[in-house]
Length: 293
Image 1 (spheres, one colour):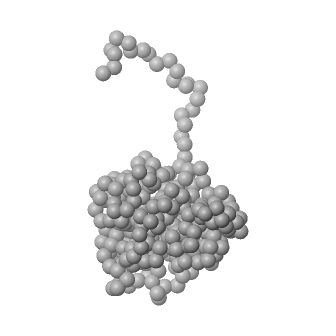
Image 2 (spheres, helix red, strand yellow):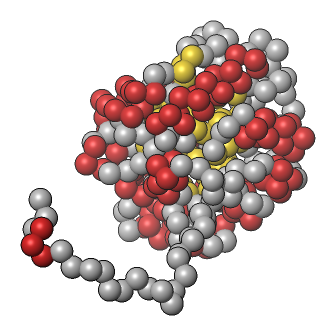
Image 3 (cartoon, helix red, strand yellow):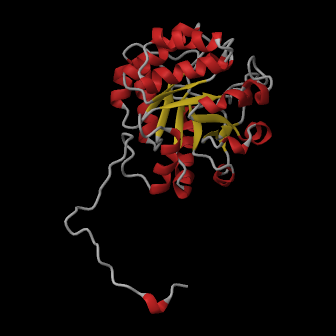
């Protein structure tokens, strides 16, 4: 308890200085709760407004796919170079050391695998996300799929409801079925639907006319890396996305399936945060590779 005999009147109230009303650095997020913005600022670097997310949640539908046979050997050594880790709760608990102190974007829906029809999912309990100290939860939305569109949008809506109660942001992930066109019209529609239903961040794919996708989405967009590409092509993908308004990348296979994953994720970070061109980033990749990184 404070010493009641030594209570002093305040003297410096800064009467000649206006109260600081600092804005928030991510679009569409200024009016969110303090805790939500705090968590988002762990994922996105405030100095650049961007993020490099390392995705290793593929196993929840694919099992031990190439590059993820041993997460403790494949992901943990390179996690230090990512701004955020995207994984599933079982693998995070089993293989990711909490001493890494990296923000987690938790894959929060599950229910089917590549052996059956995808996206018949349910959302996990928000209490488990809080127990994992997740900085965000990620939920798939299958816009345009007659069998799963309504259910996955309902999942997103539910995730936003429960996330807001605990100050946990929601990442809406746009799924692309085999019959869906991968163009700006589709991705603009899918991304906007995620945002309209409350997603604080949207993960989608790069396409021609991508600037229309980012311009029409009122919240930050990060791009999915997609299938494995040659290193220069993956770096070009990241550069084009950032140049056309993306707030970051969420790469998995283009990092952990590279012959030199640690060098690759640092090269991607150079594009996202340091403004490197794809060619400059490839030079960085080659230098780190030569140094045995």
